[in-house]
Amino acid sequence: MKKACSATDPLWYKDAIIYELHVRAFADSNGDGIGDFQGLISKLDYLQDLGVTCLWLLPFFPSPLRDDGYDISDYCAVNPSYGTIDDFKQFLDAAHQRNMQVMIELVINHSSDQHPWFQRARLAPPGSPERNMYVWSDTDKLYEGVRIIFTDTEKSNWTWDPVANQYYWHRFFSHQPDLNFDNPAVMEEVLNAMRFWMDMGVDGLRLDAIPYLVERDGTSCENVPETHVLIKHIRSVMDAEYENRLILAEANMWPADVRPYFGDGDECQMAFHFPLMPRIYMALRQEDRLPITDIMAQTPDIPPTCQWGIFLRNHDELTLEMVTDDERDYMNLAYAADTRMRINVGIRRRLAPLMDNNRRRIELLNSLLLSMPGTPIMYYGDEIGMGDNIYLGDRNGVRTPMQWNSDRNAGFSRADPARLYFPVVMDPTYGYQSINVEAQQSDASSLLQWTRNMLALRKLFQVFGRGTLEFLAPDNRKILAYIRDYQSEDGTHSETVLCAANLSRFAQPVSLDLAKFAGRQPVEMLGYVPFPAVTDQPYPLTLAPYSFLWLELQPIVSNVVEPTEQQMEVPEP
Ligand code: GLC
Ligand code: CA
Image (cartoon, protein in one colour):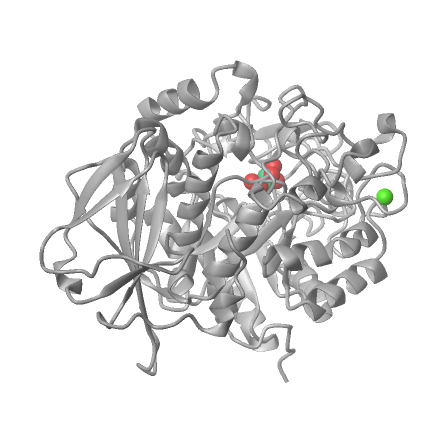
């Protein structure tokens, strides 16, 4: 018997809206300055009301926290700072009761050097199964030429261990030794961890850093065929034992290299679309749709059960690994003039500051996030336009406490402010006195209310999560225009949506070739406003600076279908 989870549709992730959060940063229930599961439980009503349908939790396991928890010292436990296993189960049930799925991290490329496996490995004789849990070498010349990922901190992928008298391999920080997948015991441990959480009812796993699982001499040690064999194995075990679960690949690669992580629908169901993300920012700053249409043209088709995960920001730097050198220079100049804003190969800033706090630009980017093909993934705090703190080290500037209200510590914690895991943002523009949930809940025109409306609207249409994409090619390249189209499998239901976005800071005219939709009735989706019917002539639109339009192309010309009761419930924007 396969174990069921909270989702009943095996393709639930296609209609999901994912919200990424860190337990530590969300809400502190016991006043020790650190967010915890009880705090998170107390905020589930907020998340349900916002309209997100799946919560992605950053690592919450025991850890020395030298990489914000991606350095794990026990895969099957909860970091005591955040609570107990029972607290986690209580959280999971409470999320499921609200019809929200839960995705957690499975960090399998590496562990913390404090993990008992590593401590045992260093003392065990070379060649023994204990030693071989990790990747060792007598020389640091093996796998020469493999790129370094954390360029700001690491000089080599090898570090000498004086206890083991050998070098160990690590693609990330030197305190994160890579696990050795040539040792079958490692896969056993990975499956144990997977079962531990899935038995409890966890709905999805984000597979961290999977391109680097297997090393092979003479290659880049990235995306090697053996890695795909391993992931297929994980998937087959998951499918054999569990119903309707999800694995999401974190593979920061070009689209053609990510494609194999979907396999024939027998590897990961989802993968992040890394290269699209910086190109959205580039298109906006250049006021030209080309970066977006170009990368989408290079994006291969994926199996029908698979889905892209798209995002604007996350807990890491805005990565510029998947752009050319020129594009990287441009992005740094445009979005990270102060070198403090840069880290490794990317930009450590939040969405609102990247947009110079310009509400129209923030909304425009979110409209793309919510209407491009794939499942949108939002980063906590971006729904209220939180700022960052570039004076904190590493990527911690975008990991500050959630700003709930204008009380002490932004309502995040009752602790002495000096005790907080990180200070709350306090500058005059983004500080918690101006940017917080409570203020935006009582302000009908706040970004928070706008975001809620957009999520509610998106959820009324399956086309955004499941439909096809076709770009239009109007002469005015400042306009990005595309058709999303969805026909239900039984043929009873069809949705066609025209999305148009003005990437320019000035108003723009555009003329769209909609001839193949002649006779259709466009209806603006936020206000349910009928627009002039489509004919075989060019269709003219005027877009205000940084504005966007979503027009449903309804089949009947003469009588606009009255909104259904469900649609009427969407509050006024
Ligand atoms: C992933 C995580 C990142 C972490 C790295 C190493 O890329 O997103 O936060 O630092 O893995 O564990
Ligand atoms: Ca706490």
